[in-house]
Image 1 (tube, rainbow, N blue to C red):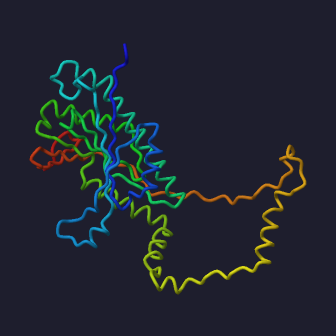
Image 2 (image 1 turned 180 degrees about the vertical axis):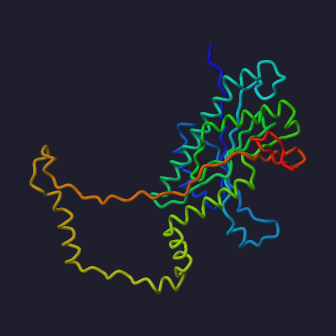
Image 3 (image 1 turned 90 degrees about the vertical axis):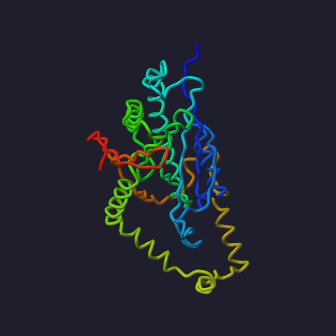
Length: 297
């Protein structure tokens, strides 16, 4: 008998400003061992009364949707026969494994993007859609994109609270709520920036850098090389190929010296998942303290 296991549909919704063709190709390559993601794009998001320029300068907002499918087998509602057992033995552990894999993938992807000078792609939330979208638990990753596998226990807790009536009318739970996450991120950024002042200097330099015609005028063109200089460079380039060393004696060949580059320390911070946003079908939101096991306010 085949082992029963969920299937995953991974939908990545990207801000069109970061969805360059090369970036999409890299994402597809990076996620090949998990499954080819469905990539969608959206225009830059901003407040309703914002200008076009404000929208273009708004932070990129990307989301990942993990659509959990178990076919005709029920796993969300405890009242359904076998649902709790399937969750405890199959779905819950599987979600933990997927969060770890996808979170690690996002971190590795951004590390590589940063090293090769391409834009990083950070996701605001990993939306875990359960029961064909009847209930969603949105997990916010750490600063660099990783997700602790233990967060799956909180997803299980949210499901249990829905089933025991505490979250009876909820259709979405966000771990943590936006206010808590924003405060954590801002505090972590201030602390990190204080330890990495060169980052702020780079940002100031980018803002002050000349652009357009001014930049073109400021940049001095490289002097054109003479025919003799080009020939001399060609001789130097080919001198390695003509080294009189037998092909089998590769150890005798001169080895290129590489300068060791210092690893860049990315902005990262662990997330405190204490405060949750519990959102009802009508859009009403309440804050739940998962440690005190009570709603706040």
